[in-house]
Image 1 (tube, rainbow, N blue to C red):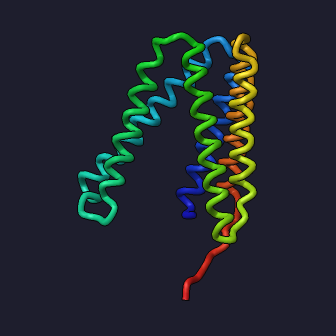
Image 2 (tube, rainbow, N blue to C red):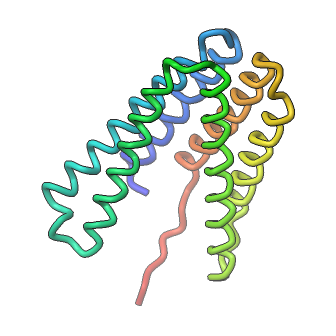
Image 3 (tube, helix red, strand yellow):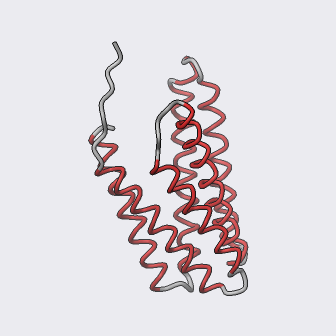
Length: 176
């Protein structure tokens, strides 16, 4: 991981930690702010990926997958932006579904790495905690304040994991 990637991971982790602490402090309007930031991030990443495709990746092997990824992420950004006018319950359900999806993907990545002989406890733990946050949110569906607090705790864990990955030393593997 390059120094710029490490720095950006730490910076994103600190930003997520700040947002989650603000969400714990003021749960009333915080969920709309989280959704707004999420929609901006998805839209910016989607546009950046599409610009990458049209400037360089269309001539690369696997360039079509970059195009599809950009389109899907841009769609998620636009859907997230359109949900800002919806009820808080729908926004929280959308965010819980994203936690569950991320947890399942982390578990599948950990399983895939296990088949190659590499144990990834971080990915396994990350997936289990994200799924646990999603399931615990489903149990407290009637209490909006509790839902927001559980989601904020999940965000605190995600921020801590991102900061940890930015600070962690990585092994360099040389292929002969």
